[in-house]
Amino acid sequence: MSYVGYSNDNYVFETENTLLYYWSDTIIPLAKVRVTKTQYELRTLVQPGLVWIFMPGVYAEMVYGLSTNEDGELGQDGYIELFHETDTTIASARLRGGYYHESEVVYFIPDVSLKKQFTPLYSLKAKYFFGYTDEPFYS
Image (cartoon, helix red, strand yellow):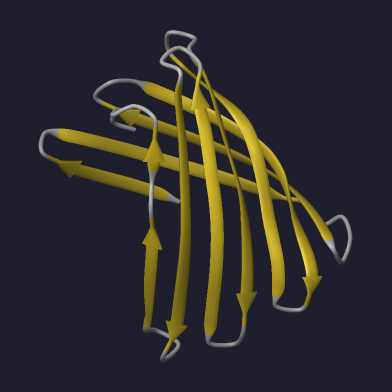
């Protein structure tokens, strides 16, 4: 996944790589590496985790890891997300949270999403999220 955003003189460049290892029919270990560049910092996040398959079409993804920037400031970030998939629909609910050590900022971002595929080329995705942090900051 790659993302580029720009708004009100603020920019975000983000890239993420995910490695999955098929270990069993119900447990799939994973590792994620995300690099994010803003006008404030360059931050690298490494997250081990796993995908737990409860039954066909129903699974959870759980990851947690540490991040650091070019000044060596540490952060923590993780989430648990539940999925239900059919041939044409994906529904999910996620709780994400984190903590930045230097600034002592804590954040929580719950979200839900629904993606409906109408044709092999066209789908519609709706997502609702609410973010909470104990400090006003740009991330």
